[in-house]
Image 1 (spheres, each protein chain N blue to C red):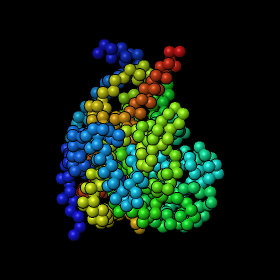
Image 2 (image 1 turned 60 degrees about the vertical axis):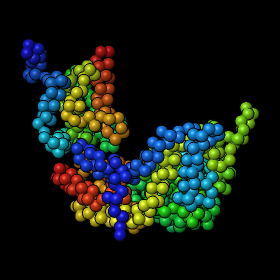
Image 3 (image 1 turned 135 degrees about the vertical axis):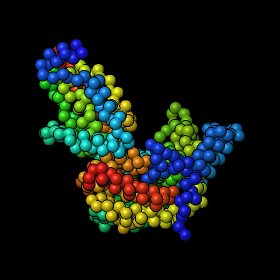
Image 4 (image 1 turned 90 degrees about the vertical axis):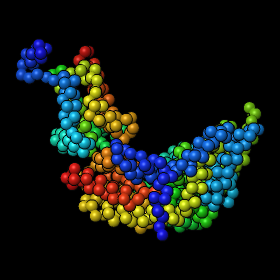
Length: 407
Length: 157
């Protein structure tokens, strides 16, 4: 029995909204997933009943908030099967998590002449922080390419990794192509050359069960708002060994042990990396999102989304002149496409008029577009609350646009 | 009417519509469309009909920044009025550019500078004006106004 989306759609009031008087079809899930009332209720409850700055508080409310946020850390630990809860650092999101590692790990381990490897299909968030690090340190950024189906050419790692390679940063799932990368294989190979690996899991935690210990990932990062949680909160998982050795990135409250004008000593993990008042209520919301997803089951979610992907792919392939970018064997529920003769922006604008939300452009992966020699694509990305009827609506919408353009 | 006749005499051959009069015309045209499909079909038609521009002017300098689609505007001052041409790789965007050209082409720099663009609101293109990086309309209008300002400076100095 596959998952019944109708059982869950009522948890997401936004899905019943009308756009220009038409029923909303939300296919922009790879950018942001919608938030169920089970999560928003928790946010409202904490603001209305327990809001108070966390940690070091003496009073009841502060203790309640602290308990909520630290409880969320335990939920994340269990969710990704980290060995210790202090290996879970809360950040503003995937981008901040990567910047933290690029700055702090980079400061510690990368020097002139060293190398950092990223893949050709990374989001700009997993390119630019490394590029900036390489500029600062006079290090070299190297790129692991992908083939025309959108699959990483992992065999090239053999030549790419040298004894100057300090870290490899790669996504688990590509946001613009949908490719699921063989990260276990990549991590094992990199480790055989003593190279630590950062996994950008922004596009995978909502689809696939993650076990950082089984993967032996050194760092793994993701965002709350792509996991049915609030915006503005994310996670950096790092192995204790590295997090202990790495210097703090940002200074401020919370991350210190003792401060004098002569010298400051730093707090222990995880607080060493959480300067300033954390986004504690959204952190609590992220915990609620994890509860929500786990109650449904990631395996069920994944199986159903695969069904949607297969259904949509078959339909899309029947449209003449439509080309799908990203045809890897292992894909998640993301379809990037172009219809010959129709600009992605025109397509997106017209679908929008029909109440269908897709994303258009480069999807913050300009190198992926450069690989295919295009300026952008239209991207439809499906979540477990989407239905086959909605895919039918998108299909009809694309056909209508084709007609308007006489393609 | 006397003003119109005066202008007719001034220009000898034709009565030049003001920016506001052209806007009124566009608003009237769009009022005739029953639904969004007709409106966008018309923008597609305008886009297809707009004569592109000489490729030599499709330079980075003439590229309007901040759009998902590429839009180029080129302007020159001839006989005291601004001559505009534009192109885009997206047809609807090109259609919107065609409307802007219709409004601003052959107008004086001063008129362009001081123009109050109400038609965008009234024909329901306002959503394309939101200051997000995906849209081009706000940048297009800004660019045209910049041309107006620059040429006005040139005329008066």
